[in-house]
Amino acid sequence: MIDTLRLTAEEAMRLVERAEVSAAELHAAYLQAIGERDGELHSYLRTVDEADGSGVPIAFKDVISSRGVETTAGSKILSGYVPVFDSTVAARCREAGLPLLGKTNMDEFAMGSSTENSAFGPTLNPWDPDRVPGGSSGGSAAAVAAGLAPWALGSDTGGSVKQPASLCGIVGLRPTYGTVSRYGIVAFASSLDQVGPMTKTVRDNALLYRIVAGRDPLDTTTVELPEPIEIPETEDLKGVRVGVPRELN
Image 1: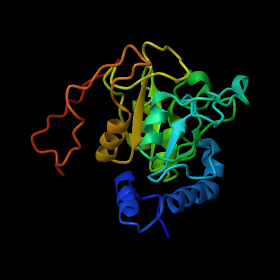
Image 2: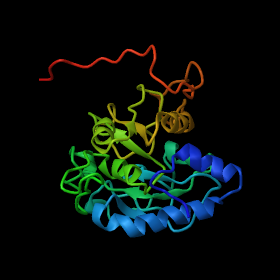
Image 3: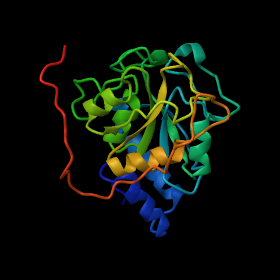
């Protein structure tokens, strides 16, 4: 029995590495959890039945083009559009052996901050279904928080990774501009859009960021990282200064 609700991506990775569970079994466990719990939350728009990879499965916000899987940006305008190519981040996840679980719900064309504006219906917050999960990457945030994906990718133009991560109690990162390719992403404001990891833990976030980051010849705004992304090792916040604004306008 795999407890997807509490399992982190790193823990899932270790299970696969130790051959305690196969990638196919892990994928099936998440699909079962989705079938049991996503009817109310509606974090997914569509799922992928077979695990195409040997590692930990991942969910993509519905703006991320992936070969052979319908990608609609939360809009019925794009219903039936099936990309014949992978976005760069999808290709890098595929190369890392991460099977795609499915595409997550979002505000239509990323225009919203609550995931209430999807053409396919709203996503609910898994902590309290009477509340919104934030947006526009609300489906990805809700899926990770509810244990329906070990990690996910969202996109952030003006807060669409950070805000739903906060509302759903997970870790969301808007990467430094140019470190993650935008090639193959359905654009909202392309010069501002950034693909970002959404995870249960900071370590998971760094692990996923390390997979998708790096120079891409298909996106001329990308850059080489000056050094590899470091996976944090400390288990406390000693020596870390946290700034809290006194007032927000």
